[in-house]
Image (cartoon, one colour):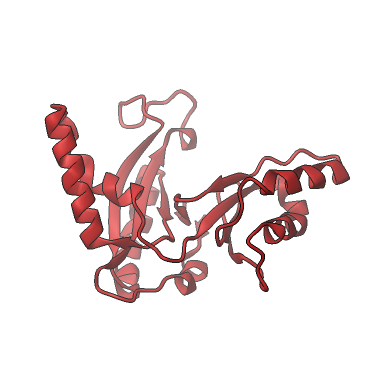
Length: 211
């Protein structure tokens, strides 16, 4: 069981009533038996429930329900650390509804709000995830140094937090030059004769709770 609530709370900041953080409880096929259908479908993942978190008090209130849903459905709860805007999500939702109606995709209209919330962040201080697998954790210090060497140059580390994941660690970072990072990674792999496969995610959730 992984519960990252206490690590994540200091990273959350609400400045206006329009702001919220998106939490998604997702049931993944790979967490079940091989080849098993998720809720009778062939989808790789299924959204159990989405939460639009308006305050720290709100997060504490819904956390027991999130944990229970994860246990019942053998699902994971993830939180996107890039804030959303209720106003801008509403407008994006309206566009998605209109597009689906025009394309006669009437069966998809009910999904548009959670889709709009997931796709569009409105945070002035973007947070990225560098996904480090457990087999690569012995080189964590070198990986973090490589991230900090990327442009733009900062006087401080761009590593914001380290959050345990299902299979390793999520490094939460400020944005950096994605084209420069592979070159630094190649130097690291050549030096230690290793093969690192790090996934950079610019708008994905990090692990909040995993049963």
